[in-house]
Image (cartoon, rainbow, N blue to C red; front, side, top):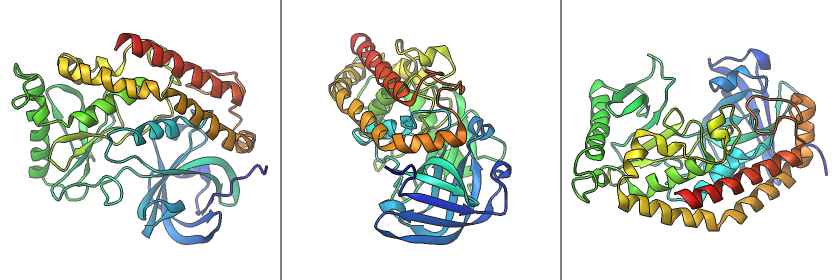
Length: 372
């Protein structure tokens, strides 16, 4: 089997790989796909990420001038190239998306593993993903809808607001242009009302409680997937998206950013497959005091628990597909068998990394099955 992928993205830009910043740069984009004609166009590229932007293998945002259906995914302009540098299995984001596809989430990002060539130089395996954004083919919103992200790293350039029961701010991702103070105040009022109901004395009431403001199906699945993954950012630190549902309720999702989950974290608590993590946030501590919700969580967990063998099969199958290309990627980035912070098994082979991920999940599932 060849050590290069049939799916390939080539980018030519007058900036060195190591010098690209978060400012947009014009580039030429070439997308190669098996059994499909090549797609070439002018585009814009910029560096993406926070802590990940400081590491050698870099992630990028790509903006094409017209909607393009890359690799069979719905046509759009905005795309993301995930580096998965921290995750030596390269599968944790894909695994989280796989769980999301079986959930009540309104939408899950689609992706394709590709080989990246930057200014003619191979840069290894990347995960080309749909960007989380308000879009007809992505996060579909009602006419007056909104998409927000809980993000501890907001800046004064962002449109954001705070509420009494959330430590970190809510950043408004949509509407993202020319947002008025009135729009910000309206979205903020939606969350303040929801929190007042959630933390009020009648919070369990079907009509006066939190259910009139928050979609129960999405919050149940969002919680479970993040707790199963023991998402170190899922304690409402960052990449926690919510949007307005068709009924106007706060709807959790979509899921995003899972390369440092499933035990792959520098902090001991989320690395340990035992113990609650996401449940300890103020929202979920309160939600679990609602016995009807707690019962729904335990009941819904059994769906994921009973399907866990299919998740392990997914991991093994994807690992088998990627294994020949991981060697090529490692010749560039030298991560396999090395200590890349954070990492669950710093000195393991690729096969040992894959098995460590499966073993961690097995322990996690059994602990949750006993303690939820």
